[in-house]
Length: 76
Image (cartoon, rainbow, N blue to C red; front, side):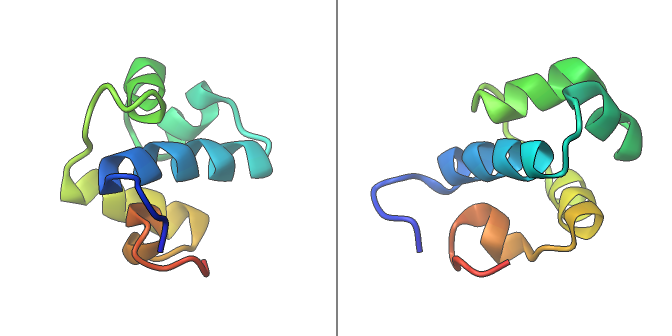
């Protein structure tokens, strides 16, 4: 569990880490989950919270759990 961070802050951090680990641009990720580059940018900056459907799409795309994205667990 990630300490001292809210779930949306952990989500923002982990989304960016996963995207960069997979060598994707924000635009490439946006295309994969049917959204815009601007939305991905806002998620990564913790300026917008995704709905559960988007979180599920991101988890499926990166093959991680929703709990991992939310910071409830540390293993992917």
